[in-house]
Image (cartoon, rainbow, N blue to C red; front, side, top):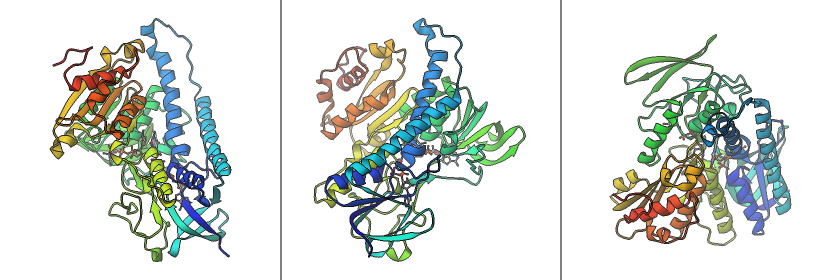
Length: 477
Ligand code: FAD
Ligand code: NAD
């Protein structure tokens, strides 16, 4: 007879594995179905994020940043370094070791919490039955009182540039995390988060990077003042970024990949050694639910859910990249916690308004809450406070004093509405604003909070003071 679980989670990425662990912590008998086969040919947990996403990309960003700093960033400190050599094989081996440590860590957490890992492809049948097809083709059906779908997303591929990661010439993010030599030239289609992060990795390691972006606005989702500053800095670093372009086609030649593109000045051609296609990601719903199960998708192909991540089917939930909202690991994990707690009869919730976004370029870009252009469009009255890192002692000492903090507060209530940062450790700094927004703090609350000196956090403090025209370490205008 088919086994019955309290909860079956389909997908073991940051949304699914966190949901499964939280369910088990709450005393629910939980299984997680996961099909991933890693680069060693073994089943693995952790999904895109741990295997071919957040973790390997941040590992390479860190390694390449260290290399770049040694080569170009220490002169001003009065440190001369000679004989620097890149060992790319070792850099890649370190990345692989970290990925394996973390993915193995999830399976250890499953064991410790009593989550059963059902290896194979999960498919939702009627009445919360889940069919699991193992690698050898054998199938098994289990029953669940609750099903949580967390099947994530996959890269969008375009006809104009056909990806073949195994060949390694025209690649998506998975291929670009695994180049075995530094390309002399790297073309990037799509100057979004992946394009900028992986473009930065290879540029720091010595590639000439050219980015072709379809949209005229750079980083359209970011606050446009910050985006303009980012574009200025990236161009200064040598990234060639063409906005408003349309890639018409590609051709592999002896000399490299010929990319034909069009912009408002006409038709152009570019030849690059490697080409990264990073034009967004699509929800993974292929062969996920039997038609008779009746699972509803929305017009973008995401699983349709309400604010509590409930689908149209009773007892079936969906979380993470496979549903609406930003495709961010922490957003999926928090949805998993919310759903697990609600299944257990608690009051799980998630504040979608304060989800932090981070782009791990140098300088980093991070934000939470509303952008200035969104507030304008919504007709919300706001006040702005800014503070440049060039006036922050810690940033100066770090030789990382470019960029700024921009804070937006409601003009009448002073409630903090948004915080936008470009500068050193923006990824860490933004968390102060997230906490403040979650507690519905005002900019005055932040202005009256004592901040250690000298620290980068003082830039947040000063931006909050600047909302009221009383920043102390810049001239208020
Ligand atoms: P996934 O991580 O995609 O996991 C879904 C899992 O479900 C996969 O393991 C898949 O094998 C499994 N699965 C799918 N269908 C089935 C099925 N039918 N049966 C069984 N198993 C199935 N986000 C950040 O927040 N920070 C970052 O720094 C960051 N960097 C990134 C860098 C790159 C290069 C990429 C590609 C993404 C990055 N992201 C980052 C995005 C992040 O990886 C995703 O938002 C996150 O992984 C989504 O989690 P998820 O659990 O919803 O889906
Ligand atoms: P993205 O949406 O960030 O960027 C895609 C870019 O490609 C956009 O600027 C878009 O205008 C452009 N584009 C689309 N079609 C194009 C075309 N035909 N030609 C040229 N440009 C085109 O998507 P991504 O960079 O692929 O990343 C996918 C997801 O992964 C994102 O949603 C992101 O949130 C997530 N991610 C997050 C992080 C992080 O949090 N640091 C890092 C990497 C990825």
